Structure formats: C-alpha cells, structure tokens
Length: 454
Image (cartoon, rainbow, N blue to C red; front, side, top):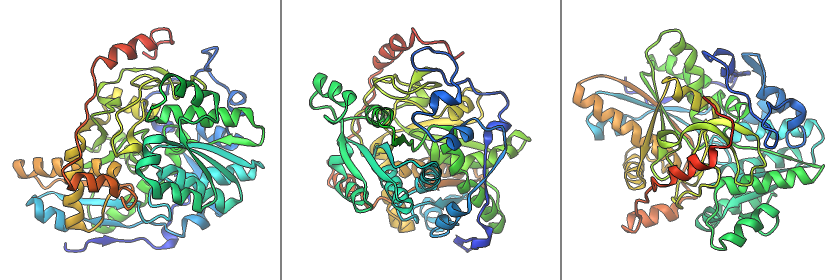
C-alpha cells in the first residue's frame, strides 16, 4: 500500500473518553493527604479542582461522555491525521511499517489542547474565574491559555525558567491568548521565593512550578489549579487520540505490534496507548514502549514509591515512579519531559510489566528529529522526537530480524518554537547531559518517611 494519509470524517469523532481504571488488573494505590498521609476524599481536592474533574479522577465508569461544547471546539482540528512514514521507512531500508498519529495540528501545536479544552470547560461550568498552572516547555501553558480564552477564564502560567529563556515564542503564544506568564521559580509565591533564596540561579523544574501554581489556587477562592499530565482525568481526556488511531489503523488495514510515546508525566503516551490496552488485556500481543530522557530517568531508574508531585509538598502523595520531589533535572531542550514523577497508571503498568520504559540521550534524539524532518517534512518537538528515535530503533531491529513489524507512535507536537535547540544541534554545540546516580541515594533518603507503596 502506497497510501500515506489516513483521515476520519468529523462524524467519526469519538463522543466518549475511555477510562482505563476500570480495566486495570488491580486497583491503583489511593492518593494520600499531603499532611495526614490518609487516603484522600473528594472534599480534600475541592479547594484546587472543580468537582466534575474530581469525579472523573475517581470514576468507576469505563466511558465518560464528552460534552457537546468540548466536541465543538475539538472539531476545529479533530479528528487529527494518521500518516504512514513511507519515506522514513525507505531511508531506514526496513521491512517494518511505521505509522504516526500527528497531534501538532491543534492550534496550540500539540496534544495538550485535548485536556486543556475539557478542563477549562468544566471549570467554567462551576463558575471558576481563574485557573493557575505550570508549564515545562510551554506546550501545556499555551494550550491552557487557548482553552481559557475560549471560555472566558483568566489564566496564570508559571513557566519553568530555563524554557522561559529558551523558548520566547512559546511564552508569546501564551500571552497572545490572554494569559499571564512568569518564569518559575518566581518571587510571586512563598514556594518560589524559598527556591530562589537557596539557589538564585535555579533553572527551575516542573516540581517547582507546580508548587507555585497550587499555592496560588489554594490561597485564592476564585482560582482553581489545572495539571497538564500525570493525573487520571488528564490521561483519560487524551484517549481521544488512541480511539481515533484505532479507527484509522482499520482504514489502513493494519494493526500495531508496537506502540510508542514519549513520557514526562505520561499524558501523550496514555492518549495513544490506553485505548489499545483492552486488546492487550484480552491476549493480543502488543508491546507498549514509553520513552524518557536519560537525564530524567523516572521510569528506568526511579523507585516506585509514594511521593509529592511538587517540591513544596503541597500536592497529594501519589504512588508512582519518582526521582524525588526536590530533584531538578539538567536543562535539556525537551522541557516537557523534565519531571521527577510519573503518572500513577503508567507507573503501575511498568511495575506489572505491561509496558516497557526506554531512556535516550539528547543528541540521538535530535539526530532522529533531523532524519524525520528530512524524510517526513515535519519538524518535531524535542519531546516527540524521543518517540521517533524509539520507532527508528524498533525499525532497525525489525530489519535485522527480517520481521514486518507494524510500529505506531504519537507525534505529540511540532517543534516550530523549539528552533533554538535545533540551532544548537546543527551548529554542533548541543551536548548530552548525564544523570548522577548518587541522586538515587537522596531519593531513597527523601522517601523513607513516607508510607510504602509496595
């Protein structure tokens, strides 16, 4: 087959999100109160989240209806296209068939808009006037500012400082859609001031920015907090990606042997892969590969334990793979993957060997991004390029084995606002950073007083 593009009609847009919690082999460990360490109830989360999202976070329903107003906005760019990467296959001289679901067609340029629109809608329905949030590379911040603009909600974004400096046009997008964005750590919160006092030159981290955003929500009655990854309801909103992809693979007459997504907190991997898990649970042979940077090896080196989602300990304790809530990763260009923790669902799937983690270096990721740009013509976000590199690795394995594997990955966003990283790479100035293994001792020491997750 020489067809390279597989589209769905608007009438084929999924009308429900898929909740994988119902189908997990065993239940997740409950989130714990940050102070008492007791299991959380809905009332504990009410100060920072609207009640509908709290219900979705704990829902026992397999399918959650997507509101009509959310669907109307989704239709601006959804269903998103699925492509077969024939030119990449030719360049690799592989018998594997490589497909990718392209989420860079959203107005914000990434998959993040899928949950941003949903979260802004549910906040609007409950009369919320302002939403505070964090953002790593700026993809989430721009998506939420876009969504808040649709629903007339003010938006406050704490952007990790190194990305604030590396990606000026991403912060310009955030401002263009009406949000207020500041570099984190900032002097606007107690959390930020505490970090700056200890390290005035801190590059920032998602853990720090989350602390600042949660603090703003907790201290202002008109403000709620919004998270762009990690939590169950966020991953669920993203499943529209995989639900569409299943239909498109049927049109292509193929079914994936291997699914791949990059992971920072886990939302784009979840979006593509979770809808395929019922087939895997029912015996279908599918490999799921989650790709992270070697500088922030949460899944490949972090222990499975209860930990805070932020540096200040304002968030609930979650059972997840973690490098410790005070860990500040090196300032790589894939800023959206610089997070110390991981989605509890994804952490559980790794623990039960229902998916495979893979860690990659920055230079090999950018090398794959350039090959993809020169074959498939899309310049990918550095985060998404981790999935491209993993797909290339699998295609090369298939060539050596002479196997016609079918590979599907999520190209979660374009890299049009990441060109400083490409400039550095093409000029030979980009370097591989390393993860210091002595950090793991600090991690275990930090977690020893928390309840055990095992």
